[in-house]
Length: 277
View (cartoon, rainbow, N blue to C red):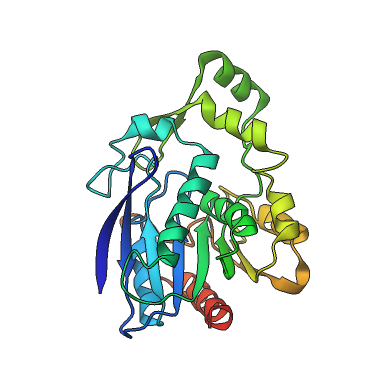
């Protein structure tokens, strides 16, 4: 069973969620899926992975960050004005907001005793930062997570500061998507503390599984290796997948799974089964 919810954030913006419920009546373990940059809960593998973990006995909460740019049809970037105003700090605040609602049983009158985060790409880094300071998180898995938020050249940043906006192209839709300078300002102002991925990993006190495709062009596997180097080794495992890239050979719209993605799902499921029970 799946059900859609709308949550109103503190500034009255709407966070759209889809919750996938397992067959058992008592929910003891919940996975929160955190999408990445230019991603959304219904992109490609989103519904498939949610159904996969639901069948494994997990409750899955998938959601769209309110400023991810996706409109009410859940498929298209029709809210580019909001996309332009997004920041990493906002996403952390919204993820904490979602976790609070999971803990308070907002999504169902069912008991949730353990919570795991599953973050893809930029969502993986946002999940790391959130898990390092939110004690309600019991386990964390990242897929193709970035090791840094500042991914821009000196020239790009100079132009960005001058024009107050950066234009990026969505290769899938060919849309020009603008990002306000407030995005970069947030990163630069908080890089040593709130948005310090290395610092967060070095203090993370929960089990961590870092997964990365060895042929990832968007976020090279060396970034996953860097995340592992910063982590507490007794609690962390690094899992690399040969001959696959950033989305593990899954496209949007979703057509079918593949051997590499199934291997990733199985590894992730075993991890959460072990540490959320």
